[in-house]
Amino acid sequence: MAKRMKRTDGTPASGDKASPQAGADRIEPAALGAAPKTAGQGARKGAKVAAAKAGPVGAESPAHPQGAAQPEPARAKARQGDPAPPVAGTGKARRPAADASGKAHPAPTGQGQATAEPVAPPPAAAPDQPSPAASSPSARADGTGRMDHLPSGQEPAAPGSAAARAARQQARQAERAAAAAARQAERQGARAARQAERQAARQEAGKNTKGKPDRGAGQATPQAPHPPVAAAADTAAPFSPAPWMRGGAPIAPAVFDILIVAQGGGIDREAAILAASLRRNAAGFAGRLIVAEPQPDGAWDGADPCMSGDARAALSALGAEIRPLHARDFGRSYPHGNKIEALSLLEPGRPFLFLDSDTLVLGDIGAVPFDFARPSASMRRSGTWPQPPAYRETHESIWRSLYDRFSLDMDGTLDLSQPEDHWERFLYFNAGWFFAADAAAFGQRFRDWAVAVRDDPGEPLACQSLDPWLDQVILPLVIHSLGGGRPGPELDGLDGDVTCHWRNLPLLYAREPDRALEEMEAIAALPEIAPLMRGWEPAERLIGERQGRRRIRPMFRGEEPPPPEQAIRHRLRQAGLWLA
Image 1 (cartoon, one colour):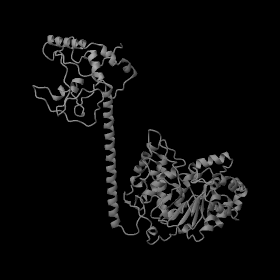
Image 2 (cartoon, one colour; image 1 turned 45 degrees about the vertical axis):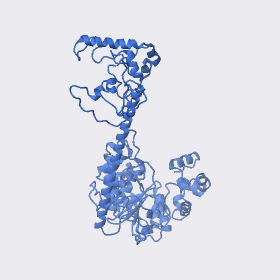
Image 3 (spheres, helix red, strand yellow; image 1 turned 60 degrees about the vertical axis):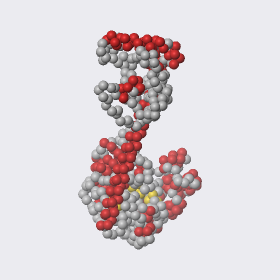
């Protein structure tokens, strides 16, 4: 018979799990039954005699010091859930436990499970009588005086048994679940309280504010321009539909300027195509088309970003106003920063709409009901940023660090219909188009905050790439700080029936509507644009040879929604049609 390893305490340590070795050392019930009961009785009688010889109660016996384990057969029976052995020296078996009604119950057989409810400590015992805990079966079993709350008439399982270990594990799991539920309830209560406070503040602000209502979904009210990196006021406006959606007076179309960037390397060709589409489809546009052309100095020193002569001639013929851009902060190190610095070319206090150069105007853009007091931007984006590292940062922690850095309230920007820490829960835009009421104030804040984050990203952004995402990282912060937010349904024409951000010709044929294809092919034949198309391989093959309609279009026909851009690129590369 394998010898069982002895423990110095009577119970296994909390959280211990049975190991294979422990299972091998366990004494089976059949083996226990082979030992005669008289052996256990004799051992207990010997212990009693030795204790009597040792002197008064409490004196340590040399044969059985305090804390020594009981003889092996008796301990094994306790572990296996057998009935309690006879009381030493009497030959009488202990009586089964009884409940409050006096009805006796059998001793536990290892099936009872302890529950997780805490039990008040037993009352203190009088000096001349033992405490209830000390005389209880569980106290006799483990020597701790601790009683778990069990159903009436049930005693705890023996502390060394598998049932006892399972009971303790179940109790710990129940305690952890209860604690987690309590924490979740506390968070939900705090969130509800914050929402109630914000709603009360909004209602109070609405009583004291005159003028047309804001349509922001949990966004801050428009703020007056303030110095860069200053704290924005935490006053949020509730969402309300546009007046034309409620049957009220529609928003009168405002006169605004369109800003684009054009430079050599093909962007000037795209800018000319945009200008042609604006002239064809929004002939009544009352604003100006302003083209920012980077100059070969400052941050562009050592490079020549200027437009070609053909592109300059086409833009001038189509009515565009070309202004030189002397980049200071970004330039060749971050060309996407052109759009940030180009805002300084516009007059202060005049509304503007920025468009990426690779955009087609398909409808009357001047009739779009922009609310320039509430800035917004394109929602045609994917989860490109951030990419949180495992076990370190989350979308929540990364975005919150940016809002906290510039003293902004992030909670009002969250889309609570999205799961926690899902990228769409947070305010994130495509910088393909954005608008605001004052280009000078918007551009100054955009520039200052972008430079600050680029130069010192901070610990939460240490593992994040800011190239080419810096402008899209800062854009939602600037928009929110000026009282803006996600675009409403009145702007659905942008990235829809009014504008198309086509990106490049292969993607245009793969996923954009037929209306956009027809417009591109018609513009390519214009006398102002045709010289720019000569020698450009994508145009010669996809438009001139009609491979776009004959090969690319059928590859993706009927796929609604279109596949992700990465999947489209992969399939076009395999077919030899990725001509970007």
